[in-house]
Amino acid sequence: MHATTTQAGLTNPSFAQSVETYLRRMLERIAQEQREPAEPGKGPGAPQKLPSAALWTGLLLCVLSGVRSWRGVWRYLVWQGYAICDETVYDRLEEEGTVALERLFAQISQMLLAWLSPLVAELCWAPLAPFATAVVALDETTLDPVARTLPSLRHFKKGAVELLPGKLAGLFDVRLQVWRRIDYLPNALQNSKVHARAMLEGLAQGSLVLFDLGYFGFEWLDELTLRKMWWVSRLREKTSYTIIHTYYQSEDVFDGLVMLGTRQARARYAVRLVRWRVGVIW
Image (tube, rainbow, N blue to C red):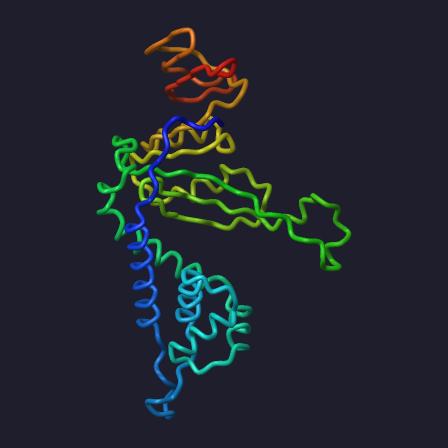
């Protein structure tokens, strides 16, 4: 893709600071609400156990503060009143799993969306696609292969599929500049369209969905139309189509309605096709 002639304005520093301040207060409130009471019989001054909310909110706050070591996280938790040793932090991070962290991220996302939504009109990119109820980008990324340091992995050749730990599917709100959803998929070779429906759950009708050619398919495009969603995709190379109406046409530009496919494999609904030429490339 070539860089466009327009560029989005830089985020206002005061706005970015407001987001970080709000996030800090939100994390501290979550940790405070989920503090576990002292164990019975140990008196009011007994040290509390380290709840999951305190562990993970502490970790996120330390990341925001630029802490670069687990010992720094431990110091923060001790400062918060938890009488624990540094080994406790290491053990808990190893044993906790991801369920509590996933729940915390989901809670943070909902709070951020509720806080940011009324501010959309003040953002420089707010007028983007005003006809759409929301503008989201859908994509997947394959995680980097793991190193062949363990004996069980050394027999695999470099670049082997078995070394891929999976991939991440993400749904990004373009207007609010926040993630709506991020899912881990263990199968790195799974077709993008398999999990796409789950990624769009809860998305309002009239939303504009942006995606790349990994999601291109007649059935998927027809389904989005049935769900009354707008979408934008590039056209897969060598895809046949029949022009049914022309809005504008010149030597370098075409804008019109087309039916994708042939009689053997054809989309159910007409779509709008816009083509323009840059040099020798359409």
